[in-house]
Length: 253
Image 1 (tube, one colour):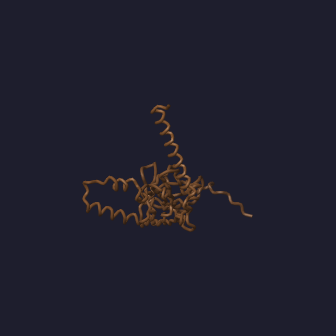
Image 2 (image 1 turned 120 degrees about the vertical axis):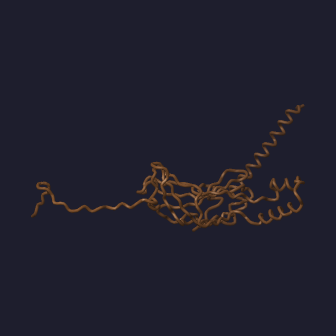
């Protein structure tokens, strides 16, 4: 005969085995994915204005810009999606001559949570354990607002003249007058169960491959000169008569 402790350990071990097996199946179905996505994510980003201003002396320079962003990432939301992390990066050459690799800096980001389902924890709690302090009219208005928001599928972004959240700091201290810079839109799917999925990874190409022609990359642009800097003016020197014996010899043939 097993005592109560042995039976409790056996029951707990069986429960954890079932939970781990169920989580593995859910994660596998999200990677395959099943069901197959209906569409593909698409995004277009363009630069409006770029300014380079001076930061702390001898340390860094900051870049300010405005951009437009239109994205449709609704196909990335599935039954196992908890939230979607979207961010915009500025990619520019490390040096002015274009050698030494590409630097990447995040200038804007946002988190898009998935809409609540009838089986989410908040809805189940409100259904079986309602708050008695709330009035009926208030709860009715909240339920109507929840239904109206549930009809709208998340993942649509439309920004005009958006200013960046973060400024770029370059280790060299000079970021002006660099060419071949671009803006890139990237995303990261955070599921309820499973691994994180990035758009640049192998799983990203399987779950949500970018739509052809709308891969979230802007046209190349150049950083302007430092704001407030004066262009260098070369002064022409007046011709001077060379001293005796200082002129270069000239050989005529």
